[in-house]
Length: 417
Image: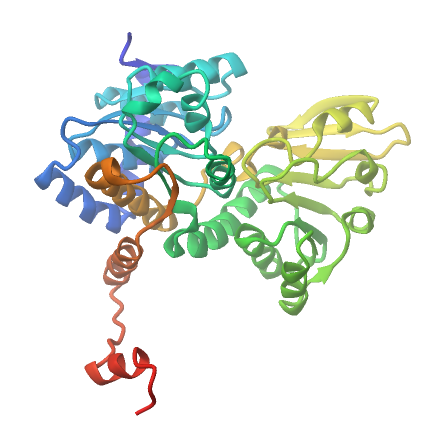
């Protein structure tokens, strides 16, 4: 088997510049890289990654490789792979199977090639590798010590497997760690989603109505950035508690059909499917723009949008126009895939520094403890979360207080003193 399948290996110089740029802005991973290179904790282990293949992911792969891991990498979305970055990794000797705009058949072939390397550790983003290891590659599952999952969508799938007693190896829910969802999901998604939308549309946001569908940590971030851009923000939710939270955060709260009639921008960010359907399209204003910041391209029902339209055409890079029978035009960004990656560069490097440090430390935890763990979904150990935060603070030149012995005794004592 070839050690790599990339679009053009000659693109590697541009990809190397991108990787070097993010490396200079990922101080936490740099510390771990030095430790891994010195201690070689992954020596003799094969590690498979399916994460959006751009520069920050590439650097994570290099950090793990520096620790002795035999790393195989593919993307987790056909439109988020950057061909020059994939070429740079391949040129550095890491197994890579990915290219931009892969067909469904090519995408699945790339996933299979990663698993053909028979990994003991998996790092997943959305659950594609884990899914294959529970279906087509089920015979390989006993070799897997465990893995880590990056996203809300993937963790939901893992918990469903665990609930049905079908999970075949332990997995760590990196998404649920404080240093992940509080920063990556909120600030990372908020900034990168709007970066993707703004660079794609070149249209103003101030004064317009932005409908954010879902008020989890990602939705909070998207709404916060929309507010900062001067938009009138509307939140749609199915959870009454989150709806009240959105209301008290200063946003309008509506059901999705009422919001459909007033929105200028619609951003889905739930991990569920069919947030926008034919009934919504019938109510939308001429010129309404739809984008997805959830993991898969099912949050906006594209078949129903196409069925409701008389024509479909590309009017600008990553913008498709759907013409409705009454003359209204609705616009879909990035084919309904992750707009921040399919039409942008993903989260800022400083944000992913923390998330990928958690991935690296979780992989290390699996390498050391996987054989003794049950086939369950585990939270990131608190000491790993805290270590990432401490390293991040140190890189920022910030200091915090510590509890004294008396204070520790006071808060850990059930009796009042």
